[in-house]
Image (cartoon, rainbow, N blue to C red; front, side, top):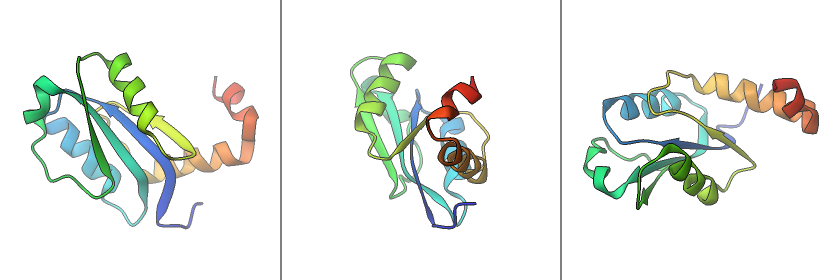
Amino acid sequence: MIDNKILPVSIVIPTLGGEGLSKTISLINNDIIKPFEIIICIPNEYANNINFTIASNVLVVYTEKKGQVYQRSLGFSQAKSQYVLQLDDDLKISIHDIAILIEELKLKGNKSWTSIL
């Protein structure tokens, strides 16, 4: 298991904001282990729907239009980690689940993509 306090992962979340987003970020960040960064991609017109305190590892990217594919692509272009994970804004996930995924990717190397598919 990863024993650092920072996972080498960027998490990209396209969103329109709202309560589900803040719960997802809390679940991800509410542990001793945290991801390197969480990139929230939200259209300019929905910017007021971010109604929580932005954590130090959260980057908000404002987009000119909405659409998950468009928002995700902008988030991916901002990612700085070795691994990038895309999540939905209402997903209930533990950071330990992400740590296990990263460990599996490290163990399997390039073969990981074929074994996941």
